[in-house]
Length: 369
Image: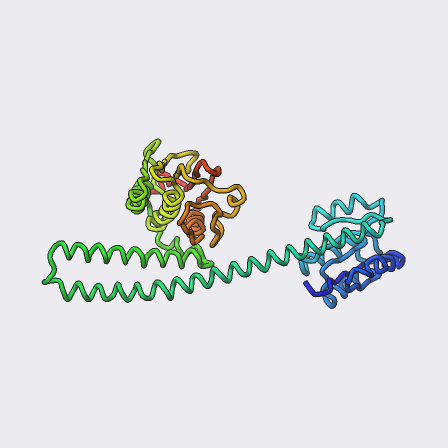
């Protein structure tokens, strides 16, 4: 918003235009007026107002058409309808289409000042939200670049050198040493694959992870995810319990990314659980969907955090002492699940733990190749 908020007044009555100027004169505003809709729309592009006061009933093009063109030109411009008693219903209709508020004639100076002040505050909040969203998108792009350069490149070098080392030392290594190197190679391969997954899901084109889709066993996905976090859980004396209500059908997807989606939730469950807590993974089927529910007995999530918990880089305020969060894992999980035409939901109460549910469309028998 400009230093001096810009206000455009469009009304065919000169007395209304003049009275608005007088009432708002002390408000440190820059004001311009137009006596009809056509002149108002010309001023709209020249003046770039923050707020527009528009009379609904004018000769020539109607106030409704003016409002439509204002919204089309810049939806952040706050539009306030000036209306007579006979057109109050029309003003209400205009509000349903995005107009901020209406001001019935005759109006008092205080009514006009208050509505203009609130309207400009609303525009300020909208512009701030847009700015923060752009910053968030920029941060996401930077994160992808950091992951690619700072992690992927050195890991690739380590992986390449390991290949050479194993080949050079093949005849000198004991079976135990060879097994250790093999495990090391596997872990590095998994890390490189995970980084590639991050880069794919953080990128705009989420459909890329669909390239390798095939039939996948949910039981296998759940078992691999639980195995992945087992050592983390053991260190915290957490028990991971797997239950299944029935034998689950397969899904169409990518096993690696689905395991990663579950691991992100399970790691959080362990991280935010109390020592000795229980973490349950339950699989079930309902209305053509496979549901994977992960429930913990941890610290829970504050109510104000719940709407944002799947946002990029968002970290809740409540966490056990010493625990940190990058705010990336659950955002990646959400993208992975949505790429599989599924959805992820959350129920949580502060101090009583959390329950995450992943819904994935099950493959029908005739769809399995």
